[in-house]
Image 1: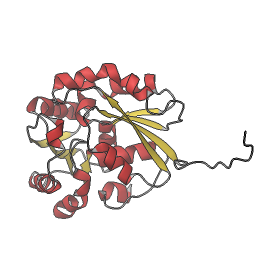
Image 2: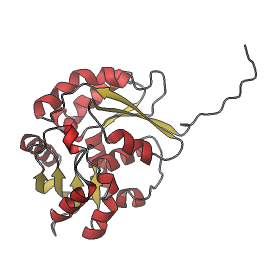
Image 3: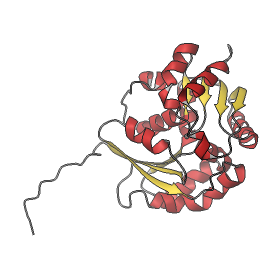
Length: 246
């Protein structure tokens, strides 16, 4: 056996973040891998779910969350474990989701994508928001009720009415940008583009430049929140006011 092997702290010496994504997810993994700063590892597991993004299908995910979290990096010292779905977070509830994540990954701080959104809105002092989503009306209403229950005022919500996650990932960034800009109102503090499947990170700066207001997008807010929970304070370029100033 060799006795002079050379070791260092590895590629992910600053922090390791774990994400439980939907079984059919196609956007979040690439966004996190591309945007995470050097020295921060992003690691993934998938939770079973049917392709149709309905309230019933989202609620049924709860039984698989703990097992999925346990598979991310067994004994890998994750700093944070996050359920990476906006709509699922509000359908099941943050407390329920975090409880399941903690069962599977007890050494990490548990959180959800939507917890990152709310932390971002609070940090930006945004209480009155306009929202756009790709979801069906039944999911949109749950999201509005959830946000208003936390004290946010949803001035308007425009949904795209898309059922399948596989179609959500194909919505062009240009369309997302134009829709987000179109729903802005003078009395809105911020624009929230909801859903990790959307490629919103590519157009956040364009939305903010056109409206003069902060844009909070699901994947941007999730990464920001997970990094801050892990003690990583890097300011990343191209991801809006949230990352530039906070």
